[in-house]
Length: 80
Image 1: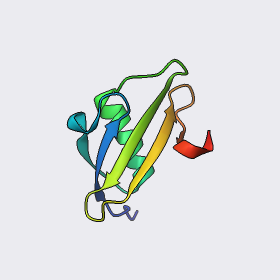
Image 2: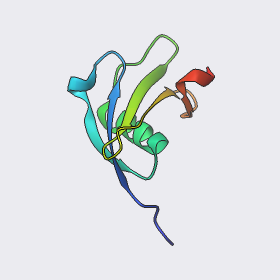
Image 3: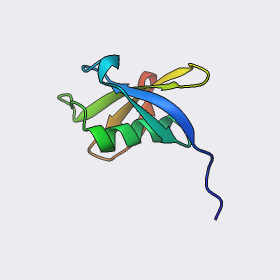
Image 4: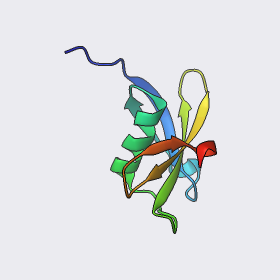
């Protein structure tokens, strides 16, 4: 089995800010968002969701994801 290449991302949750962010190694932006949520248990909103911002360490590109704790799905922030 071939493993996906790991990249370094900086992830932080809405409500806690960049000062409480962490470097996550993952194969994609989405995987980094989910990994951050699983490891650091950021604050959950009233809809049982977590908004996570993920920035690529090398290029600086940033994406936002909403993670629904009810079904475990992560979607880009603009799709909700």
